[in-house]
Image (cartoon, rainbow, N blue to C red; front, side, top):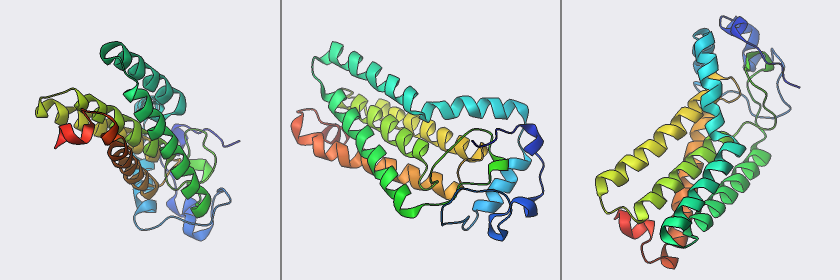
Length: 218
């Protein structure tokens, strides 16, 4: 089981943990840190604090399976009570399933190492690329924002919903880097994959609903 570490990792010797020289324990993946990944992680770890540690542990939960599952159920219930159909259930179920399947398929293909165990503040297992939290949060919160647009005639409110969804997804992704369980490129790939899933699901379901997200948002 990965060790959970605290402020003692705030200041560290980058040479000790740099992936390229094989130092520090990793998973069994094949890809290493690329581009600015290592430099960004070094900066993040050097600026950790007790307050930020706690805050990021809370933020990252907004991309966890159980929190997204509960939010999806709540949105589905509210939607059904207000509009009397199951569009939200279909959109969110297909979005969640597609995001989960596609991210895990890519994880299996790429099989990339996570950052070293000694730099992680929370437990994490499996391949790193892409970030599952980032993929799922971008997909689910994006889908909820699109659903909001279905019955929202005010374009400004539609834009606000999309911005808020994006901010939540960004916050979740940044928390994964801060907590030391993902490289920055894992998170960026997760955001891109989640956004792609939202676009795909919205276009697929557009013909099935008179007030589809795509038609409203044009």
